[in-house]
Image 1 (cartoon, one colour):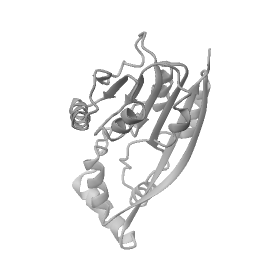
Image 2 (image 1 turned 90 degrees about the horizontal axis):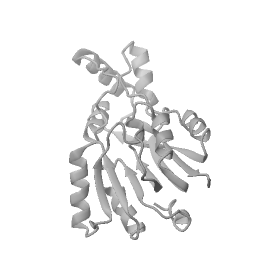
Image 3 (image 1 turned 180 degrees about the vertical axis):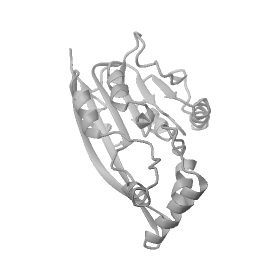
Length: 233
C-alpha cells in the first residue's frame, strides 16, 4: 500500500477496479486509502466475493460506492464504456491463461493517466521442485508462471509506461508435503495444465526432496511487482 501513496493525488477522476479480491485483505486497505472513490471488486470465485463482502461489512466499509462482480473470461475483451482510474491486482493475474494478454486488455480499461498495479509470482519461483523432478525423471506439474520481461515488453507496446522490480522471498516448511499442502490451502494446487503425479510418483518426489533438504524444506518465491501508467491522450 505504501507504493500507492505517491500516486494518490495524481490519479484521474474515476472508479478503482480490484481484480481478484480473495479474502478482502487488500480491498480493505484500498477502501481506507481512497474513501472518496467508487470501487468495482471482482473475483473469479463467488464464494470469495461473498467472503470479501462480509469482511467489509464487518469493518463498516460497505457503502453504495462499492460494487461486486464475478470476474468472467470476457470482461476485459468486451466492449464497454466504463473506464477506471486505477486497476489493482494482488496474486491473481498469473491464473490467467495468458497473463500478458490479460494485462494488455486490462490497460484498455484504464482512463488516460490511469494506473495499473499488480503483483504475481514469476517464472523463477520454486526451482527446487523442477530440479528434483528432473533428477527423478518425473513430470514437473507446477503451473507455468509469467515471465516478467515478456509481460513488460508486451505492455510497453501500447500507450503505457511500465516499470517493475523483482524480489526473492523464502519460506520454510517441515517437509515437501507441507509445502504441497500449503499450496492446496491457498488455492494454488489445481493444475491449469491437467498434469498430476500418481501416488507412487508423488511419494518418490517427496521422499527424495526431504532427504536432500537440510532439516527444513526452503521454498523460493520469485515475486514480481509491476506498475504501469497510461499515457495522457
